[in-house]
Length: 284
Image: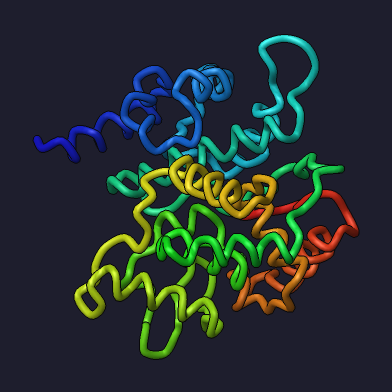
């Protein structure tokens, strides 16, 4: 049995048996938080799954409603806050994505889950001038520059960026394959991507588009760029909201699914423009 098969077996068995302690060693490297933090955030979910007989690998049809209830639990005190619930769901979704990578799953069981609102009231969004400054200072770093331009021009999520393969793009036509739709890249996005494509070998470019192994790698590079540009640090989610705030998007240009896409896009745009305080729903 090779290492990949062994890892797949360990992930499958740990999810089926709700054994978080046995699962974390095999997924820790791609988690956006340290393993001890992930254990604290997810332990109650896995414990309740074992108690209720929920198979986390092949969850039942009412899994989303069950999970949203369990994700509110706290070790003590009142229910968990919405941001904590969102982080728990994101971590579990990350683990499911890793299970997909090793062939244990074919789809993410959290796809389409209704996440609670993000509590970011009062957190200022980055300005258009600051976004432009970030783009200017990252031109010497084709990977980071392309990532930031894709976020700004087409509202890419970090998870999308980390999974992108060169085969997802037709560089001749500027068409990009995305999880929920196909996007025709803007001139700015295509130019940024072409620079990175040339650096990756042009016609011989294969595999992952971006060098970031986990989200923390991209955030670290972005943090450094913010310091260089003299602007306050803005996480990728804020940059995405700035895109929805400042650009006129279609469901195709912003990567929303055709099923309910217009409604979700309109809601996300209103929120990003300050008519509410948070994205109410953001696919896994």
